[in-house]
Amino acid sequence: MGLRSDGRRDRRRDGPGGAPPRVDTAVGRFMLGSLAAIAVIVVGGFFALRSVAIDEATGDTRDRVRAEARLVEAAGLSDGIVRGDRAAIRRLDDLVAGQVLGDSIVRVKLWTKRGKILYSDEPALIGKRYALGEEELELFETGGAEAEVSDLDDPENRFERPQGKLLEAHTTVRTPDGTQLLFEIYQRFSSVNASGTRLLGALAPPLVGGLIVLFLFQVPLAWSMARRLQRGHREREQLLSTAVEASDQERRRIAADLHDGVVQDLAGVAFGLAPLTAEAQQRGDEHAAGVLREATGTLRQGVRDLRTLLVEIHPPNLESAGLRVALSDLLSPLAANGIATSVEVQESPNGAGSSSDALIYRVAREAIRNAQAHGRPSSVRVEVTRPAPDLTRLTVRDDGDGFAPEARDRRGADGHLGLTLLEGIVAQADGTLAVRSAPGAGTTVELELPAR
Image (tube, rainbow, N blue to C red; front, side, top):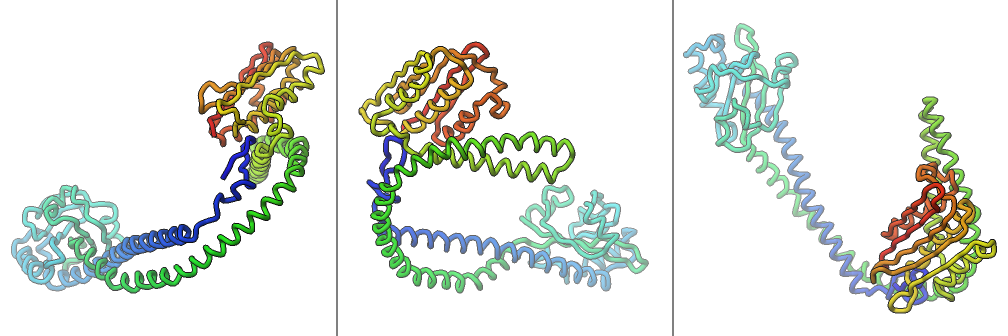
């Protein structure tokens, strides 16, 4: 899309979207996007199904630890296990080795509430003491069962580290005399992955097949829509060319009215609401403060949007006469009032106007207006230089009263509202705007814009 010297996109030359869209390109992009969407769905579905499988496996592990605990409680647990009786340990060991341990469960432990291991199929752990976690201790009070991924870095799990990732589950059991103990099993995590793989294998083929069928049905529809868009693009080009040509003068008039009327009024209201917000906060009325803050933000955003719109509209004589003449016109009212003025514009190397001229003009106008209205200068100088091929610099310097930096921070108290709002527009153009001043030392406004 072409750019005019005022920075506006030249729709009359290239149209709103450049050349008419190619049908094959549009359909190709659609196909790539659809394939990417299918890939995202497949990958996301895998992880979602895997998460479901892990949750189900965790629930199954809780159910299993309850079942194994009831088996141990009924058939292998005796009061002697609490005293460390060897016969009681052998009896429980026979039951665990024969009916509990297997391909899935690789470790069994029996704990006291104080963290002593009364039994384990790993004899080296019997009699050792380790601190129980809060969840394990809570089971002594509430009952039930818990399951979680094992932390193999814990010292009590050092014998399980060679087994790889494990899922551990706990529940409580009671000896015949009523002593409450914590029963713990360790299950291989690979069984969880296997469950997720089976679930994915069952659901993935119909899901992916349905997506592919949908994709194939959409391709001819996308081709037809792209052709219609191409025809509509050409028709809009013709209509837009006529509309832009007919409305150019009207847009300039509207821009002037907006700048001198609505924009200033909205900005004034926005800054006027700020002290009301502060007063509401001081009163502790958070609702009113929130409403005022939201209203202020909306007004400021509206002002920024309007300012951006104004910058895109071509100044009255910028394109036809050039930047030097436009800036001279800005200075002419000052010269008529006896203020010495000078303007120097370094033309671009290619002799054409810069796409940044509209913003340069806008900043210069605000700086000159502020100098005339508040600075009482005896001279104002405007310079536009190009210190590098890809950089344009505007400098507006006056010898007026100047102002303290903190005065400008008081939200337009010294009349510099226009420049304050322009800072956001300059930032959108990847430029910088600096205002340097001091009481009695005049004011310098410097704008730097990259080539666009």
